[in-house]
Image 1 (tube, rainbow, N blue to C red):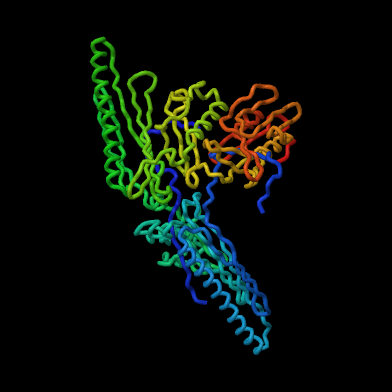
Image 2: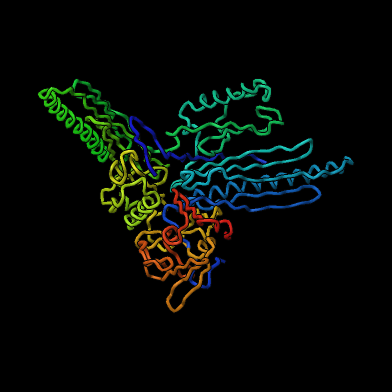
Amino acid sequence: MKRSFKMFTLSIAGSCLIVSGTQLSFAEGSQQTDAIPYNVTAVPISAIVQQDEVQVSAKTVNEKTDEVSVDASIPVIAGLKDKKYEAELNDILERHAMKDVEGIKRQAKADAVKAKEAGLPVRPYELKISYEVKATGGAADAGMFSLKVTTYTYTGGANGMPRIDTYNVANRTEAKRIELSGLFGADYKKTIDYEIGKEIAKKPESYFQDGFKGISETQSFYIEKGSAVIVFGKYEIAPGSSGTPEFRMPIPASAANEGAVSVTSKTVKEETSQYIADLNIPVVSGLKDKRYEEQLNDILERNAMTGLDELKKQAEEDAAAAKESGYEFRPYSLTIGYEVNAGGGSADNGKFSLAVNSYVYTGGAHGMPAMSTYNVQNDAEAARITLGDLLGSGYKALVDDRVKQEMAQHPDDYFANDFAGIDEAQLFYIEDGEAVVVFSPYEIAPYAAGFPEFRFPLAGGGAGSTDAALKPAKVAVNGKELGAEDGAFYPEQSGKALVPLRVIAEALGYELTWNDEQKAVELSKGAQWTTVRVDKDEYAYNKMAPIALGAAPVIREDGRMFVPVAFFSDILKADVKVGADSIAIQAAGPAASNTQP
């Protein structure tokens, strides 16, 4: 939640892999609902899990005769954004598999005839086809989809022969096959050959002497967890006991984020008896909108130089005043650095985010840090990105609620009653698929807290979208994670996210009763009692005065009631921890161990 000062650094964060490619082988040969309206699951927007992964199902072919045994799971892809590419890829996958099936059937039949003629026993041939999804093509993989297909053929002898085919696709409107040259540059062969050679040299006894001559133009590889995994066939460079050797090559960040914006430094270093300046002014290049790029660079330089001019003027005036008063004057200083938090390429869905950090020292125990952020959609006509664009029209209520929750849970870390809500010019940047809302030192917390931060994952049309759909989230009660249906949030019109009442409350040990006359749910556990009324932002515990939580309970069409997550912390007094992508709710006291999930 809090952020220490970061100065003099340049880092590209959140640059997930979005390389694309397909190594094609053309070798011959009912939803459960509740009947009563009081099961609530409240989860803030911060618990959204984006559901945009490519789906892969299996088309099976199983045949068994005296001559051949076929067990084929042919992958069928759904969910690629490029439907034409998807259809072509599925056609290739099926044609290759069926070619192998028909080929081994013909071979088995012919060889069985020969064996019978020679008076030899007929041993059935085998064909097995399986697949593994190495990258799902969703947000977690920066839109990258990677598939590994293994075809195992046995036609006699001590063992069979596996073949590996790999398919790597960028899940974009116009899908594109990956090339190793695109990942590792024009000298990719030299780079990869060198790294593989080093690995072989570590265990030379595991490989054929002089067996590795370098990778080929059609080298098989798949992509997994930010690396290209180079795959060799059985017996290609090593004995059969080594199987299909693999070598993992981390992919450079620049290749992982296709179309990323470049940022370099314009340095200004000056030192006099009155001031010290160490400025690394960002210079942006690679935006699609060159006019916007020119204007942004002008703003970045003017802001930095204006800050330097103001420091010089103040230092000159204060040095003169100190001399007249007979005081020693210590030089003032200005330092400027920056961070690229989102690169503006394919891995960041075209979002470019830059944070410029400055630190001014004019005497005293410490200086004053400041931050400016620049968030741009890298399109042909670039546009400034706002929190409303990212989190929806209810973003203010969403952010305010999250900040107030954090301040209430950790009152010693923040100024009491000092947060009145964010404004139109709220500071934020974009990183790792999240909007990170930032507060300056002393704004809501002491100087030692640095820049307090609050993260809000982005999903679909914006995490604050007020559509009526339920979206899954990671919700755990008493250490046990709820299922996808129970762990879901419902976005209320104000932008606040609500979570299901009954499944969470019962897991905390409460009994729930529906009062149809008052349109309310009564909750009780021993001497503890509360009631929740539909459309009433009034929540009371035992006989205490009711308080408002910013949103009233809502009953959906399926009969489930949803309440703010603060209901469980502020009213039921449970321990609630809200993370970047999860919510953990723990019953207070010994009752936690006796409740059911």
